[in-house]
Image 1 (cartoon, rainbow, N blue to C red):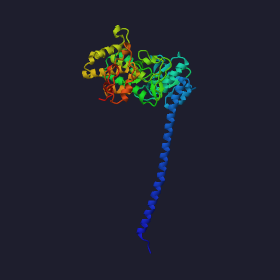
Image 2: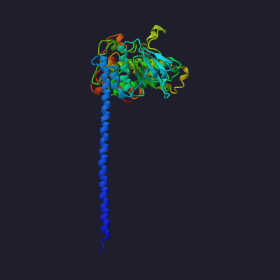
Image 3: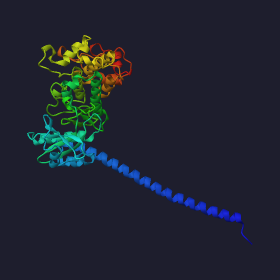
Length: 433
């Protein structure tokens, strides 16, 4: 007697389903194992990178403060995962054609133009041999340990370094337009529109905001000035020269500094006192830099009449009299290029207000860089600033203005700020348009 065809078909289908089920089960287990291994590997890599960054910061700080025994070589080993390349003296000589093209010189070194084998133009900063070994090593580690760990469009990029008995050097990206101070005093700066200058100021502010507020560890630059801001081919500003910079824990409200830091004329008043400082010293320096951008001149010029020699005070006098447009040295040919005269005046007035808030005598009265960026970009209304030079004529009013107005509510409306700034007026500073 023959078997039933339907039963045979059922058994065949049942067998096929069993095989398919077994196939899915076996592959599902494999997929789960592969995913687990990949996740575990990624976690290990992330942990290793975080540890390397902590080691780099610790090594640099231990050497600088004398609390550890880290050498420069150990420091470089600790930051090896940060990706800066190590070059030999022979390679640098080849890149620079035996240092034939000098771009500039500063207190810590001389900068030469070079070209990498792939055709990329670079700037090679060679430390002065006249520096003491300790000083040279501190500057070297400060730059590699800070800018070597950061990546931002408004910070100069470090490609690599050379640390040898004969040569200590850093290799940076090449900036076509050079330093901001030379640009402002040259024909290109004189011919730049107010909008272009505003964009440069915003770029510098963004770079400082990144250092102060967005890095894993806060970085205080300590030497912000036009000579330490470089411009690329598109006039994108990049903060440079981190030789005095410090990595700061976000838990630290103040930092003790050894010796005098910064450049006279740009350094905040507290930098010259034996007391702790904060990142607000960079805010003050940025305000002085912003004034030079507005006037397209140095803040001190001994070649002009005495009443005009110190530009910051002259700027306040003009601003207070409502003549702030006298400060913007705009070529007559550019008055039509800005298209909208009203917009040009608004930009200059806004930049003046921000600059005067930044150079307040008391650190607490200066806005954080995140607020500075928003004010310059027009995202925040900027209230009339307090006279930043009132301390030259009367006792300064000690007040932590910016901390107070950003943490308090609209209550206490009867509270009066320094020099007649009311709570309502102060809230306007941080209110969004």
